[in-house]
Image (cartoon, rainbow, N blue to C red; front, side):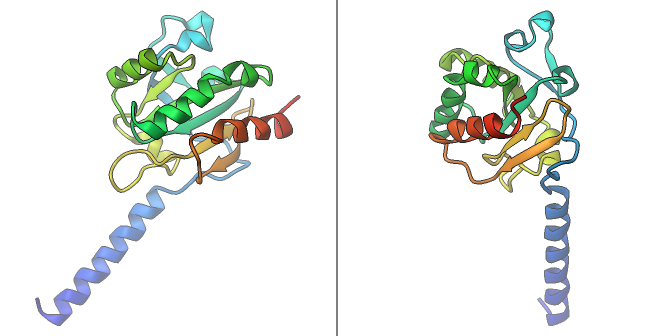
Length: 184
């Protein structure tokens, strides 16, 4: 490859990477959280009046705090540890008006299998088209979700972003934040 062609190729690659990074930016804290409208499992666990619903929106949850945790792949070790940690604390979150939502780029069928296998008591959202994962800046280069968590208050405002998550201790860390900062 000629030298000018190599330089142009490098410039194009850098511009492409910068554009991709810009599209996958984290949303700002203290601003409205990006919209969510996705297929979901077990919606009735948090919205009994919508027991038969097949999609969940963030608007459906107005008046409740939301912990939205992204994970790479259903039924893998770290994702199972984190999901079960949230499962075991759902009632403690409910005491502070908070619901848990898990989200990955898996299909709804795989999310349903994961819910059943691990007896998850909160909805899992299927973002197989990756639009919400991208809007939250959680899409990685492999096309799956990074292990990020977003805490959204009862008015739909993003209050906390976690990008460094340890699956085993994270549910307690988030619960403490909610208790300290979003308790009424």
